[in-house]
Image (cartoon, rainbow over all chains, first blue to last red; front, side, top):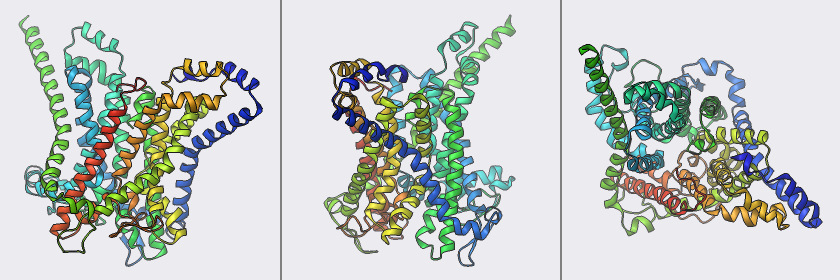
Length: 327
Length: 285
């Protein structure tokens, strides 16, 4: 598609050759202007990395690698370790993936292979609307609706049924790692669903027809011909969701409890890289404190960039250009 | 014989069961939307009145007041963000579609997608370092810049995708008539794709309108009408956040109302998208 629409060099050359020198100059200026705008994307990436590196310089110099291994985050004693925030970020994101990926893939299967044709578009629109709900609104709903409900129903049940696991032991606050994971799951459902749907749609119909011809049932077609074929693309969709979950800030900040915590209980309040920054940035009263927050941002940026590159590579290998608009 | 038909029945049953599971998944994915809309209307609608849209926030604990300044502030921030994000994004998209070779395009797309994944709070930190520190204070400029950063890759990618849908024959016809390439692009290609480009811009605006994290330490918030863009400015999502974590019942009530307005705003932007996407060069997704 892209190759086909590039302006023909012959025509462009002929015209600019015959045109007045003024418009040739204008042509060149416009070309450069557009090039600069396109390169701005690369410049921005360098700018972000540079600013965060510059901001975290003091912290990097003071703590070195200890920043990543220290479990203490205490502004009062000026001890700053990233491990609790990294722990909370990873745990809440994994919970989110465990909940969101199966639901999203199931929905994507329904939308591509099962749903009546006239239902597909409205359902897709609804999922897009879900994606448009701002993070802070999920946070508000989480604090006043989800937390009380979880505290009263799901969490006690989990503790009763699965309480022999350390994961579900300890006091129930309502806010905490598991709650954040659930909110994050809801928030990444739309992106994982829409990318999975594009991935499944790009599975050639020949695959499905071949399986049907062998006498497979509908589910067998999905499992053998579609899911196994689309495995890598779906993995990419999940990783893209992970990238979103890692950096999600407001809703998590509002329901995680913002306590540095490393431990087994999922009911316990915790903190994430983004939530610590959101909570403490304007309170940072020393240079070292501020610099440590910048380094948390640097860690977050580094991890999300790596995760997103991985996801792009996997999804890109699978689908055509139009898919990634939603991403 | 009976074994194989029993097997067949089991396979059919399994297939039906898995279909049901998929339908269940779809329902569960839609459920949060229904639930959140229900609560927003139930808890927020009753607080929407004239004062809410025109008034200023009252001091902590006292009843009444509104979010007028926050609504205007959000619009101002969106305007600043668009002034930064739209020209760069559109021109970059033009480069990808009209000028760039395969290799450089591949890299620029890749960078844009990576930028898209950068957490929004990180943009807040960058805008803080670039604007708040040198200007020695929170400002509308800083908040708008943070949102503008987020808009650039979004607008760039959608613009490119729309422009490549403009038929090549349009460009060839214009060039054959002796139009220089830059005029071909600005007079023929861009106007043809205008609706699609506006769609992309609206989508990007909808995406940043609800952003709170990048504004926390850039726009910062303000309880009064903002007079200068070099001063802190209120924004709807910021105000919702501030009220939501407050201990006052009336503020929490207003947080729900603010959230409802915010969601209506983002939905209106995407409704605007649907209005514009009737263009014949718009793909039906």
